[in-house]
Length: 200
Image (cartoon, rainbow, N blue to C red; front, side, top):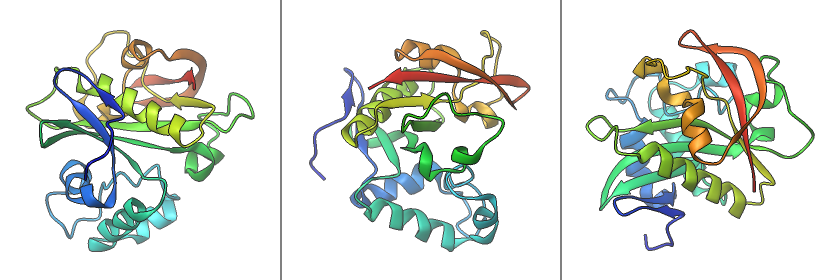
């Protein structure tokens, strides 16, 4: 699995979610019950109808197939050999966000989206979301993205429910060099969502 890290800190390294790392993808986004029809980070990757159709092991198979493609479905953060984080990243044109009315397009550029950031329990508060975001941007740039955007909550320092925290916060994106591009009509966990952008 030797490959150059997309982003590094003294403690963490970020790599693309290749097929060889599919077990780590499962650790980060697979449900505890393999027959469950939830997560696998598909709710914003595929149309709602397909997300409902994919059940149990079909969801795992779908994501495994994504890891075999030339463009990987996201990036993984590691503390040594232990996977500790995941960020989903893809061209917005390939996602349901392409047709979203609540999260509008800023302009006609082929923006890439980072819409899910997850850190394993027991590892939060260590800056992993920051290095994940850097790695996701680096991967998008490698794949030709002219601009990268996210849709975090603008929570103004208030606590965000952990089940909805995957969208990220405005402060995390600002720390990674993103700037506010647009406010939206979308909300998450009771907070307004904004479009944050960073040029490649």
